[in-house]
Length: 281
Image 1 (cartoon, helix red, strand yellow):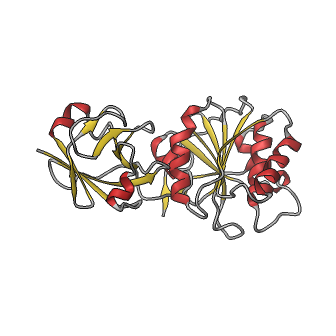
Image 2 (spheres, one colour):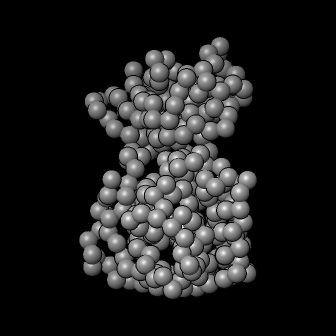
Image 3 (cartoon, helix red, strand yellow):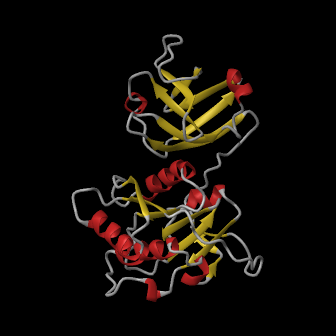
């Protein structure tokens, strides 16, 4: 759903240009076809000095939510000024906007379909531009491969020092996914959801430390898929008690439901979007 962020005219200060030379790539292209190589080729032809870093190209096909989480979890590992290209784009060739965002000292280039939604929610001091300057696109422009023909050249020109304002006008509404912030429907209760299930079967929730302070862990119990989890651990391998499922603060900063050397997702038959409730006793 679209989300209005700021009123036009609130700020006129020009943004910095990218000086890091780093460009990260994330997509659902996989590695079987020519798509990733073509994107890198376009960038290298415009800025041969750019440093290209693959975050992943194994996002499930058309899975915008998975891409949004992965970008959120990874962008802070890079230096300020890094350009992040995200291409999971089921609406390619339609009226959906190509955008360039500046948030948290980083640049983000991709479709306006929610892929940068969590970044823009976390980094409230952000600016977003509708990319319309076709002189920076590859020609002829394909209606099915904007990753190569729009996002790659825009990222490359940005890495050469062009200002974000060069690519189009600032916009004040973007497509947003459901909010990251969990709800508190009544005193003593927090309701969240599973944001992501990782390769190991850990269930990553949208509950972060600002919602659940460590001092409250002893009073908290986690309810998920009809099971009650009362064990909070410091590491995946810690063996404390006989219960297989436990809660742990993961590397992305969110509360995870895990199992020692097992897949918590398989034990729970959990899926992304499943409800997670924390009750304080």
